[in-house]
Amino acid sequence: MVLQHLAIILFSYLSIVAADAVGSADQQCTGKEDARKLEVIVETPFNSTNSYSLVGAQVALALHRRKDVNVYLLKLPNFDPSWPSEPSVRLFNEADTLALNEGIPHVAEDAEITGVADLTIRVTIDFDSPKVKSSRMAVMVTTEKGLLLNSVINGSTPVTRLPPDSVLIAPSEWAKMGLVNSGADPGRVSVVSHGVDPITYRPLGGADRVRLRAMAGWDSSFVFLHVSSMTSNKNVGLMVRAIKKVRKTYPNARLVLKGNDGLYGSADILKDEIEDLKGLVTEGVVEYHGGDLSGVGVAQMMQLSNCYLSPYRYEGFNLPVLEAMAVGLPVVVTGGGSTDDFVRDGVHGYLVEAEVVKKEGAQRVNKRLKGWEDNAWEAEGGEGWVEKAESFELKVDEEDLVHKMEKIIVEEAKFERERKKRGEDVRERYSWDQVVEKIVEAAMGM
Image (tube, rainbow, N blue to C red):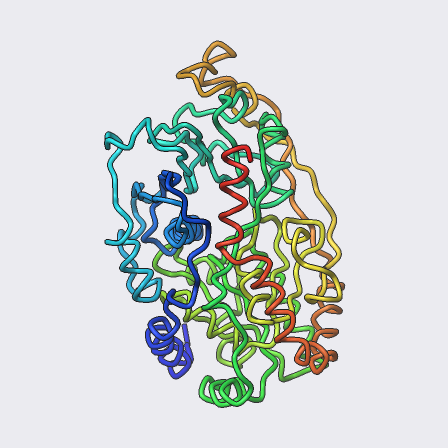
């Protein structure tokens, strides 16, 4: 696949240089310093480019910055054993990398802290109870299709009868709906949004942005950026059809896709989904980048773009949308899904009309998930028991997507004037420090 090598070199270089320049020293320690500190264990595979791992790392780092918390890390294995054990680039700035690898104590499942810690927070793809038992336990979990799918349930762990000392943390109302559909008690599910790193994800100054856009070959283009695994729920085929229609009126429009070849094989997914992709890349309609980038590298791509595009079919949260908003980008996203929680139509960009589509399928979920006691679900019918369950997707209106993309182009000057203000608002409301404070409050029953 043809790539713009200059742009790749630019983003890779900047992600290394800028990562150290914006170290976490700028983020102030939070929390009051008490004689008795809260003992918190975070379980996560923190050294992966998977979004759950990145979220888990940010949760641990935010706790590490608090003066009233002692935080410990228990490193979990990757959900998929075939995923690289180490990323090809440094994911965080030097200070945060040092904190994750050395500054925050690492513990094993049988560590002395087991059973005496105040809180264990589990952050990973597969749903399971925490490995380390504490006074309180929180599982940060999401659902995408309105249901907790069998493929991400680890062993026989259920979501329904949570013990009184445990809570589920969902990142969106859409994700909570899926947990409830899977049998979870809605009173035991707290909704706490994911967050952004306010140092990394911020608007870029005008002169620097103009210069770097020229270096990337984007100076004469209106760039719609999309960052994801490129899996079917992202609706990449729809984006390609839409950009081709938009270019009939606005020929300088370009779709830039940032995939993750090392983790998901995004390039191969695209080849299977879009027949004329090679020609579109050659013509400059679509540009693709599949290599690993740090958070700073991804932020640089967002800073140099004109709009973030995500007409998804289903998402549990969609963190890149929030990160793009933090750098001040207007967004065009599916209406009616998880991003409704934080995207204001006409303010942060535009919501695209979409219809909720229900799909019935066989799921060994509701009767399986009956309690955290070992094998409690077996009495309900055993491992082979199957129940009809509904899942949900969003059918995006293609013509409305094209309309909203063209509207963003027409209103470019308006959104550019408000870029800094929008970014500041998002960073203030959704910093990881604030988000983690809410997670702790929900988990501790405060």
